[in-house]
Image (cartoon, rainbow, N blue to C red):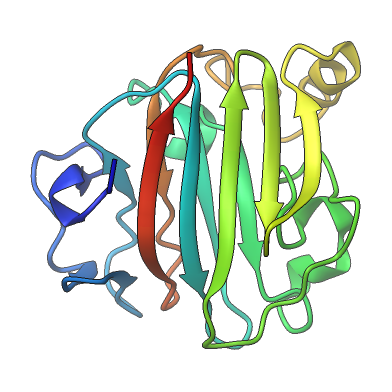
Length: 194
């Protein structure tokens, strides 16, 4: 299923956040300097393949969250994040667990995938039960299990330790992060998995 602009709304809102995101027939673009309102899918998903293309400016930073529970104050308090980053320029690129494609703050990718600022890169998230895969440029760069005891221990000693909803939901929303920079998304689609 194609995820066009009608499939998204503002975090904790009912409508598309026109003041924070620009939309046309092909792209969803975060507006620089606008209020940092994330986009949340209208539907909830459990097991799926999410495919997308994204482009970041020099030093850009964004992310895609999954299985987000909107009862949380912010998306990152609930949903695990596939980090999207210009590793070469952004300070988070110095830390393996916050580089492009990482499970933000917890798991580094098996290989680095630098972006070309302004150019689109293919990404995908594959989520089936506890198994998760992060894909960049048609390569699986990270795989993990959400119920892995080592990962659960990492969560308990991380910035997510005081977030009781983090990585708990078995179904939830997809969220596209507005981090104050001009991230662009296009060709978003989702395929439910049984």
